[in-house]
Length: 408
Image 1 (cartoon, one colour):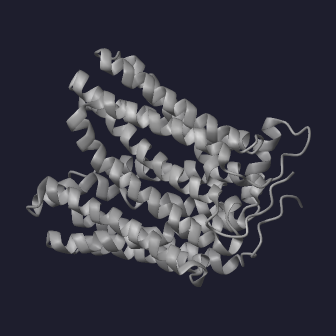
Image 2 (image 1 turned 90 degrees about the vertical axis):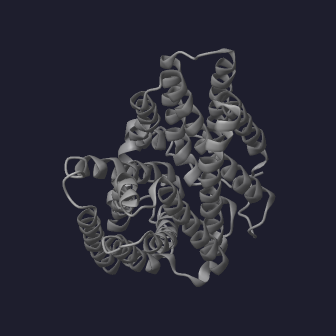
């Protein structure tokens, strides 16, 4: 019997998915810290730790191919398989680390495989929430999902460092691996309505090209990855320059940590606030002012003279970023046909992921020669210009309340 669409928000399936996704965010943050410190403790090399982090991110470039595969499989297959494989990798690495030093090549391989599994898992996960809740509860559910994953990501980042410091990398990896396997065991209890399937006899590359063609059919679906790219690129100056800025202002490493802690707190607060407001907030109309507010906040960072001013802007930036992330998610979920979630979602993820590293590469040659305030001023101005372009695109594209048709 085909499962019917849900008629309320708090079903068993949504509750399991919500809790499991929060645990997954915690595990991902914890795994990254535990593996990085394992490399650092064994080699003493920050450069090799950087290589390990890069290997975990590199497979994200393949996500459009995985998104095509996801759209051709029963949705639970990549979800369950992804958690089983990630759990097995973390447990294996943790058990080896308990016995003594782990060969660096093996750690690199585990990090690369974890990133590869994540590139396969993420496109599948993007299409789950819209299938678990009624359409009128989708915005509230998305805010809850976004807020909880951000909170648990923060807990994993902060608590993960404390856990690794207290117990070592090996026990942290074992805890992480066990968590992934528990989520995999619970996923069969999540009931998903049918989502449709790829046309019978359609080849992989035909399906891949169909996804690209679908994304190009609407300026709005084509513009979403660009919006996400600018959103991530706007954070590059903070990641690169904030340590020097906080040192110059006398706040040092503690101020750096407090800045990003307040930013994440703003993210979580904004997400839960939007979840509470539900459909009273029009996410599509919110996207342009939120985008402009992000540019304004980055621009204001160039005028700050004290750590306290920067802390206030960090929290505001978190609130704005929450609104913008929610807008991207809602436009994606309501505008894209569910049979294309994997392909369009993976394209969105890949382009947005490239924003920060590309911006860092552009900043690297001038970061030590140009005043920090100038960099923030330029970054904020460019983001404001991009927000004007996005607002113009929204005015041209009168988004329909239903997804773009899959055919025709």
